[in-house]
Image 1 (tube, rainbow, N blue to C red):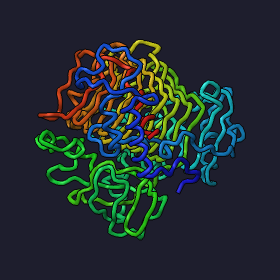
Image 2: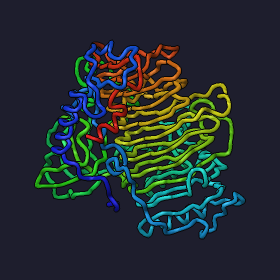
Image 3: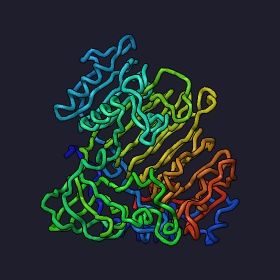
Image 4: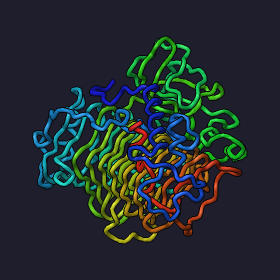
Length: 569
């Protein structure tokens, strides 16, 4: 179990009580909230310039924060259930003492990795990287719990990477064949991944075998059942189990849901009803490879056979999905990267899906980990969350010559928080044959948040694989990228996707206004947008049960930031 846990301890009753109070404030116009416009959803806010308008959706949400049909509860997304202050580990090593040179004259990667491993093996702490430029001819790996790599600030400490992951590890091919490079969506030159999983990954890549990237390893066989779980409803904080003898407060476990023959679990992720029932699931082989759904969560308490989690259930628990609490691969917990810039040697961006692996910082099988004040430049892919959950990326920045995925979130990554982030405008024109996505999410990833973003290029890349219950809020975007995703990966969206207060500076649609695409979704407070050449059609037939409010203006919606408002409940 990791140490220095913070930010726990808000009860369901307290949160519900606060929700009622906030609803009362919104209804009376007190505080910063204003009364709702009362206009139909399709007209609310058009052309307005008022100080603030509270949509009906917000008032509804505060009455049912954990079970609202369109808006997910994400108030506990991020490390340590969204703690504002992340752990401050004591400094126990300095890379200069391990032989690193701060003038870029020699390869510092061996010294940095030795320092990280030594600190990790002795229980954790902070490895200090003083001001300067450190040439790294190898990747930097953090594989032990409670271990932090800390520079003197992103403007003072630089890691200068000279080689890519193909050179360092090998060709990382696709499990679906062809010449696609999996370095297009995996791996980092700073890679936070538990020791055992990292070794298996790199050994498999070198052997030209496919290393499964999810929480439980190849063929999903690296887990054991701790207990089965009785039926429960989405939004519940507690479940009853068959046998709680192997469960303890503070344990990190997986809630594991398999699908049934009729794909009832996938239908439920899409919101249930006639549209998902009529959808063709069987031929979406990439999507079905992401099942079982695995949700890492920490146990808050065990009382008899009643187990309470630190977050509410993301889905219903039904007996036909063989619900179990299981072990996992052994997540990396309590570790982070702070106060530095990772800059790769500048090379032209590779053609689409042929990335060499000049990638930034990636979290894999990580929980309660973080990056703070970290910038990456000249990378193929910026910040990655691969089967990573409950992680926080704060004050991060992607810049330089342009990247394929500035941020990617995939393979069952849940409950993560990306806030105060920037994607800079590229410094050189995009080479032909390349692709720009933006803030990517795919592979049944759920309950992730992107908040307070400045996207000077890119798009909201829902990359098929039916991500669901994700939130993008309080973001300015020059929407000049394109989304991706194979047809065999299934729908663009599952249920409860929410876009809240989005400022599209170039007025281009493309997955910004999602009421015509995403089932049981909410689009609130977005300026008018128009379609361009990438025009999508909904994956599901019939009524999508999507909501649209305050369309035609941005920054009039109150609360301005959906994540912050949910936390303040």
